[in-house]
Amino acid sequence: MSDQFCLQEVIDSFRLSLSDTKEVSLDHYVEGWRGLVKLLNSLGSVFGFISKDAVNKIDILVSLRGGPGGAHYVSLQSMVQYELQSELVDQKQRGGHPESGCRTLLRLHRALRWLQLFLEGLRVSGEDGSPPALCSQAYHQSLAQHHPWLIRTAAGVAFRMLPSRASFLQLMNAGPPEQAVLVLGEALPLLGEVYSITEELYAQHNLLNLP
Image (cartoon, rainbow, N blue to C red; front, side, top):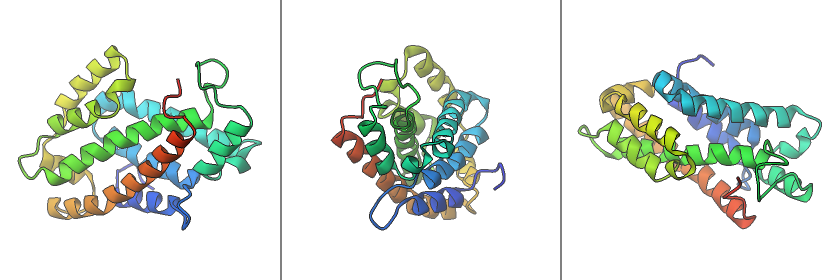
């Protein structure tokens, strides 16, 4: 894969992450996020505060997957089961196991919601859609509640520097704008399904508010 963002690569990775029984493969989930990091990086250094955090979380998951307990990190479901049974998830404070897979993936899960909402807004907004406004709205519906004031302020500055809708659709690397909109229409239900499966599993085990 090149360093250039390609929406189709993200679609392929997240599609492969879903098994017939709706288990989520961590390897393909991580690959999908590698693609989304390319999108963040293509927007310039102002998005570094989110991009760097995503890369850090990806590295933790890759390390867990390649470590001695890697067999337990084949899927999202097996990871949650293993870490809960092994008491590797601290549900009360940061101390103990701050780099548990469950806690790490939760951060990516929240960011995935932000990108899903933003790209959906971009898809349906039409030619007059404003990426800065759409991105800000999506952020306040998702990530903002989990960020301190300093990060929220930096995010607001970054969003104001986003390109026009037409330029943004070109970044999708999916053909002309109208084609990019069609490809987004294919991608977003897929991202939504992965998000919903994760959300339901985390809610079931009371993991949505891990510190």
